[in-house]
Image (cartoon, rainbow, N blue to C red):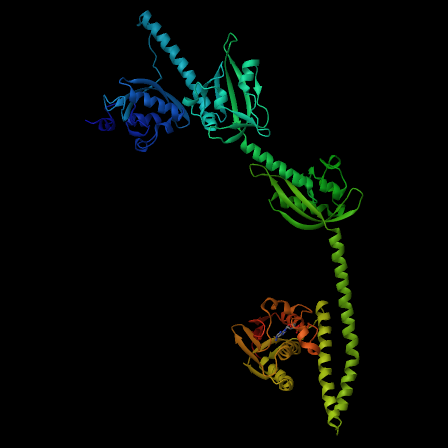
Length: 625
Ligand code: ADP
């Protein structure tokens, strides 16, 4: 029967057995082997034996190689992992197939647990007892060396052991990984070959710590900034120490060198140093505090802004710099921090050491520890006293400008009414001279234009002061637009433009004279910015719950990047090209605000210069009454 089937038969081999290829791949384990490891038998074929071992892969490989080359069974010990524990097993390995050594393709391993049952000594002869004692001593030594091997294999630091001449006798897997020297190749070589070290800055070789230990017999620490050069030339920053190994009689037996790769540590040190330098050199005040509001750090920016030196303020409460009337604000900030929230660009006031009130913009973010718990906060404060002062000045200048415009509109309006009345009177007189008649027409037209400008000016002032009152009612838009058409038709005819108005019978709720003003402003623009021969159309239709009024012209159009801006006060795209017909750049501002007061919106569309413009006004539809 082939060996694989014998192994598969659960009751044939009772000892744990496994057939392994010469390069360490498990082919067939028996049930008892799987039980030793507490793993399902079907999970084992195909796995590497060394992945189950606690010893290094190279040690397992070495043992298997010895078995394949030997014509006898080779005794050894295997440290296997069973869940979290390591079990030591006596192993006997034979080359397989039989008689194929030294080029056997497989090894058949039989494992014997090292636990021994109790044995009665009275039945044994003296020599048997002696043999047993030796056996126990050997077992105990082997166990200890196995414990040592497991310990060295499992610690995270690299361990390198030399004999008293400084030649390598042992490297653990971390040391082999870092130096890139496997134990079997490193063994017997001088330490300087396997472990060459240089100074990070000077790049000169550093005195080898092992030679120092051998000379002085004391523990030696590596100098700072030491770099290990691996076998392939990789440079690894390391630190640690070398210590002598002595026999009980004091003879120096060798040296153990323990070192660790500090690349990560070095990187985080660099990052920390960078951060510290940024905080130090920042113009902003950067302050750390605990969740109880106790100051823990204070950068030079904070000293410049608030006047306290770090030693005067660290350890004190943050309320030292908070005005008494704003203490409640700090409690609120702390509560938000405890919830893990950030406070962004919060404008507030602090008190400097000399009592000066400093206006600041504050950003406060929670600081978390490695477990993610919030342990404090960092505050970044930037002085905005100047900016605030400039803002106040601007607001004041703006307020004065509004006041001036309101007064101007008011004063200009005063004489307009009597002038208008007088002009009406004059125009009613039958003039026999045509130039007088013409003069009358000009007078009337220019007065209308002037009145519109002054009205826009007055409205903008009112809008900015929030003093526009609507007189709402139900509006029949078709009637309103026809009234608009009647009043504006002469203007369009005089300009040689075709005006068409098509309105569905739709109703909105609003102030009819204000809506008339809006449509009139937009229509005046269409007239103003469309050359003779052009067309202007007005349509009004219902779309769902809304009414859309479209005023479209074939005029000079609006650059697409200006479409939103035309609604801003005093924005004029075509000022230069219009000469005396230009307005104040207020008509659309007034229109937009009035439409918004009606709960609607207005949009400008144009495919660009020379391509005409379209203004869309959206209002909520209402049922007529
Ligand atoms: P203005 O008194 O200058 O006409 P508005 O606020 O009414 O002020 O309009 C702002 C600017 O928008 C105008 O100066 C003009 O450049 C542009 N504009 C408005 N309507 C049109 C239009 N129908 N065609 C082209 N440009 C227009």
